[in-house]
Length: 191
Image (tube, rainbow, N blue to C red; front, side):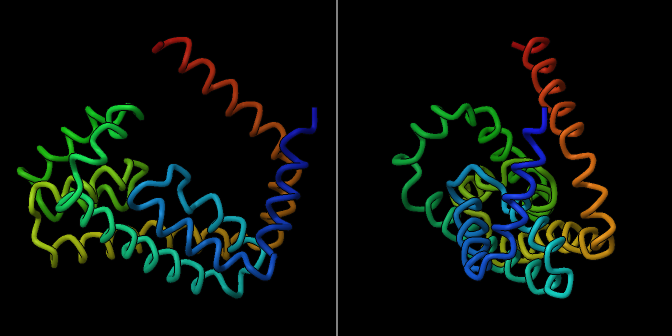
């Protein structure tokens, strides 16, 4: 069934849209404090569709993400009680408690790691404000971690270019169904 190739073609069309840059900035900003979709899902196809702008997209994503992280930090400082029910509702309680412990133990390195890896960065931005992490190490760790991640994604897409896009289009349905199968398997094993 060719479900994913149609979605892939649509995403590539959106990636070339004249307002895609604004949407990328908005998703990058909001994901760092409350939104669930990571900006990589826009950054990768946009960098693939326009390899000549890959570094610009990575820089924009990094800056918008760190600014959004500052919003998360502010939420942690001033509005933690207001967002705590959402942390619990979305199942982030354990991650939040882990983030608090990591800040107590590792400080800068905790935010750097959260910025670079698929760990929910928003939880760490809120927790960093809640535990009173110093702002300068927070911003530096975020800039370095998020920047490394987004420039790596954009660089891989730029490097792959048009040949990668064509190969991905051929394999996207198989990869999509393999991913669905793996997610289902993980769900069945752990739930």
